[in-house]
Length: 261
Image (cartoon, rainbow, N blue to C red; front, side):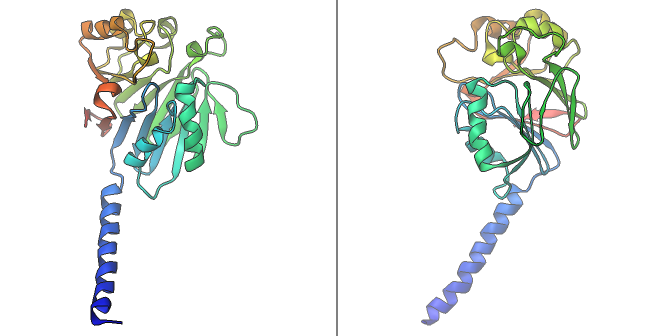
């Protein structure tokens, strides 16, 4: 072995160690909540992280959600503490199939009864799920008042609370269901059904008065987000962010205030 080879080997291992340490330091979670509306095209996927806790709500239409997870989760972490499925439409469900192949999921929640799956639970109105400092309250569906056979109208609607931060995640419900679910002000609204004209009424916006509305949407044939919905949001003086324009949308909070990064 030449002298140069002997010298190079320690330098190689030293360089590798420095790179690995750098990756760990810059991937290590902070002590703030990160709410990421993933750009998955025409579909929904919301990633929530706090320290070592990671939660995914819906998975979009395909495996693009994996890009979002790999960008915002530590490279060594292959566990999600919880996955929520708001309803089994393909633009919310299909990406979760790839997530379950790549990640261990501790708990799974949905809007329908699940048989034969350990640690899986169907949520109904008034059910609560607490994961660390995060609390999720199910506002819909109501077992006593099934809306219809429409999958969208029976979407799981969640209110997430972290300290003083309140976020409303609506799935694909319509104005008819919005009338039944919420009357108090919130901070952030995930607009229902990708900004469909049949959701997000003016009366609803007046009741919940969000500071920010996020629309998860991609190229589509349905006209989402509808001109009427955007006009209602503008009239209500609500800031609007869209994944088809901003790509991933990340909100950071310490439980007191929040900002868009």
